[in-house]
Length: 299
Image (cartoon, rainbow, N blue to C red):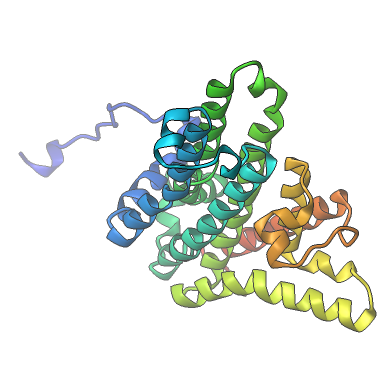
C-alpha cells in the first residue's frame, strides 16, 4: 500500500481506567523484579516466621499435638501484644532488607537513560509515576508484613472464639496501620534516594546510613547536651515509639525499641514522633519534586 494512502487511525483497544494507570509501570517493574531468583527465595523465606506463628497458635488449641510433642502448655508463647509485636518487628526488619535490595533501582535507570519524558508524554503525571514506582515496593512488602499479620490474627480469633477478635481488634489495627506507616516511609526513602543517587549499591548503603547514622547522631546530641531530645533524630527510635503505642506495649518490647535502647521514661511524646515522621516524608516528596522533571532546565 502506498504511503499516502495510510490514514491515521486512533487506538481502539481497551483503555486503562484513570485511577489505576499508575499501576501500568508498576506491573512491568514487578515483572523485572521477580525475575531475580534471590528475591523470590527471600520472599519465600520471609514466610517462615508467619508459618511458625500459625504453628504456635494451632498448638494452643490442640491438646493431642502438645501431648505428642511432650510440651507443657505453659511453655507455649502466649498470643498477646508481645506476640504480635515480635511478629511486626521481625517482618519489618525483613521489609527493610527487601527495600534496600529492590528500592534503589526503581527510578535511577529512567533518569540515566532519559526515559522520564517518555513516561510523562503519556496520560500519566509525575504523581502517578511516583506512585507507580512506590507500588513496586507496596505489593511485595505487604505480602511479608500486614497480610500474614492479619492472617495470624484471624486464625487466633477463629480458634479462640468468644469474641476474642473484637476484644483485641487493636492488634489487627496496629498490624495494619503500623505496617503501612513503615512501608510508606521505606518506599518514599527508597524512591527519593533512587532519584538522586544513580549508583544502586551506593543508594542501598545510604538507605542503611539514614537509619544507623541518624541513630549515632542522636546519641551524640544526647551525650553532648545531656538530654534525650536527640532521639528525635533517629528514625528507628521514632518508629519504635509509634509501634509500641499502637500495640499498647512498653517501647523496648519492639525490635527498634530494643535495638535503639529505648527505656521507660526516655520516650519522646507521640506527637513529636509523628511530626518527625511527617517531616521526613515531606522532605522525600520535596526531593522527588525537584529531581523529576519532564525536561532538563538549563540556566
